[in-house]
Image 1: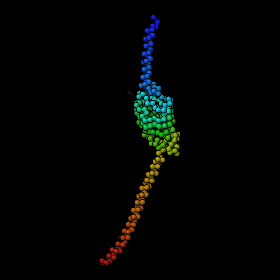
Image 2: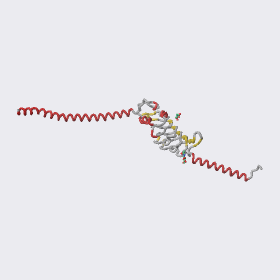
Image 3: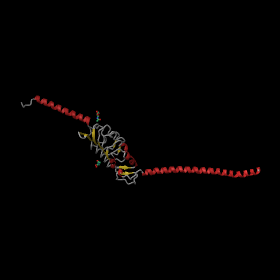
Image 4: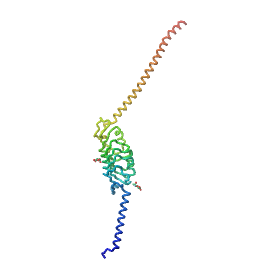
Length: 258
Ligand SMILES: *[C@@H]1O[C@H](CO)[C@@H](O)[C@H](O)[C@H]1NC(C)=O
Ligand SMILES: *[C@@H]1O[C@H](CO)[C@@H](O)[C@H](O)[C@H]1NC(C)=O
């Protein structure tokens, strides 16, 4: 009694090995099926599955993110672009953090498939210059667009009313440069400046083109009129001379007859 027999030892060893084996298969299984290999995953009941890939020097968006992920943190990496369909197949994604990257471009359809689920999209502190409405198509999320070198021009002005993003998101577009340059919009949130019209130069150009075209038509019509009048003047003069000569001839004839 109280002594450990070799048999006990063996059974203890076997139980221990079994436990380790179960743990190992669980770990491998977990790693292989439920999380991206370059990121850290966690899961809890209130916020669902979260994938953290922050600050990993990533240059391409991982394509092995589990399809039941609700939050992805991809901040502080080296992404320069978000390709089309980068997050397709993630129907439960609620939050996507792409802040503090080198993003200068969002391809059309970059966030395709996220329209009905995504609520928060962080694109702050990137290198975004040109607003591409095609990238945000169908997205109704609240977006953080601050801290980007936005270029404000007529394209931006025309695009903003057609964007589905939560309207307050667009106040994050603070202009760093503008076209036309002389319109002082630098440092201003474009959406909050209803009096600024960046399409005015284009409108003016269109007006000038219209004016030139109209002037051209007008000149042609006038030239034709002048030509017509001249040609007919000649005719009219001849006709008039003919008419003038008539009464005298007729007169002579009348005299001759009566
Ligand atoms: C995720 O993918 C698996 C198979 O690849 C599928 O069985 C499952 O229904 C998918 N889950 C969601 C939430 O789409
Ligand atoms: C947007 O991002 C900036 C910088 O990354 C942060 O300071 C700010 O609090 C964010 N705004 C919102 C509304 O989350």
